[in-house]
Length: 124
Length: 484
Image (cartoon, rainbow over all chains, first blue to last red; front, side):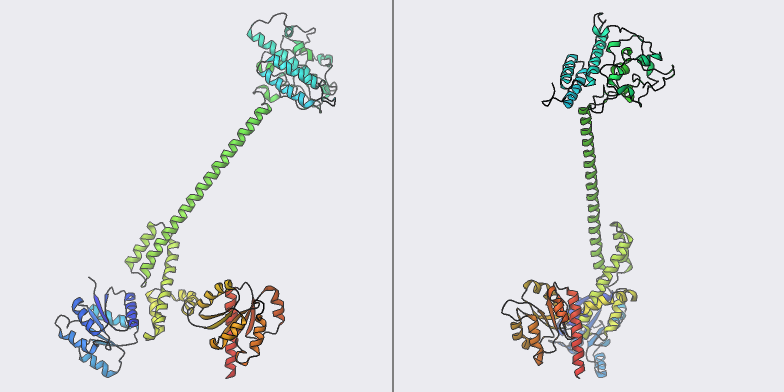
């Protein structure tokens, strides 16, 4: 059974680009898409992915709200979450780590760098 | 019975002789004689008539002899008054020429006796008066049409040598006098009193009808061979076509598999091995497989680059992304450099380059050029004539004007439209290209067109048009740059 990656991202272009990069990374992981935080929580519980890429600014429920929910749920608390955000200030990075994110990745993305990061968490 | 003009009808006489020959071969002696009589009436001077009658008599006698004892009273069996000695050398000199013989016949210098056959020609039982007299059947006179083969050339054995020729040695057969030529029991000699040498041991030469039939048969065989060759050729072509179609189908199948595998980058080792096995099972040559792989790889890489370009604002660095893609698709630097122009053209082809005001009365030309202009990145605004173009020009503010020279009566010409724009300060420097007839080329060449103005003759070569447009736009850019 292939590993799953949950991408929570409201911007379609970003979703397409991450999908494009992941397909070409040959990681063999299945990508599950969520368009907001609420959907991310639901799909995380449903699919129990190996990794979650979470945009912090989303409609309905943002990442800041969704991540504590996931970290509070015993079914999903073990899943590593990478904060995938355009907020690149040092305090933003500290804050994401404080709410339970394993990594903070600032947009715009670099395909090779992102793949290396994902590979690291999938291997664990 | 001569022809109405009184001259002998040699052709008709020949036909009678041929008919007589046929009858003779069928042992229908009466009919043969009738034909000979007809020939005699048609051409009394024909030397073969007498000879032929002798032949008929001889064959008739032979036939009767074969059937039973020959009656003593039979005219053909009458003994000759003189029975010459077959091998007597003096017989040559004593041989009296027949009255009907052409005077030149015995003098034919090329005719020589054939030693091998000569002894056979002199059996001890002569039937002198029915034998074929050599001089009479000797070489035919030039004016006479060739007789039937059986009577045509005289046998060498009976041809009399010219008096000036030294007589042959005794061991060699000496041509006997005509009266002394006896019938020979041997079929070759007896049946063919006047055969060609090669016919001595062969079947009779074919009649013209037989020859015609043989020719027809040969033609038919030739035709059948041609048909067979044609069929074989067609079958070969059909097989080649089938092979090509099969190969095309196999290549298509492999290409599809390659595209699927290369969609997201170079396939892994297992997939690559499977693709190679597929190529082998489809009997696709190694070089074709390699070429196909390279083609698909570059196509997929090019598509991926396009996708990345479209989302480049989401990427930290386009160049590092391209570099990553080059690795993903295993595109070597050499390959990249080789195809760089194509990749770049793909990238910029649909990017907006400017607006073209296209003034044309010709719908067909519009149809041909507009898609090409749009594909090259231009927005195209159409006008049916210069007047309409003048109405649109201010609103459209074109980067370039493409204009035909001729329009319907009452409209401005393309050249007048250009002059009008030159006189307007606002549109004075818009690049302008006239599309003209070949006959207008000299006039336009001599006209003083400025750097950003030009012309192309119709039919327009699109590549040439693109080059000219780029050139004129470059002049315009230089002009605008010079203003600052």
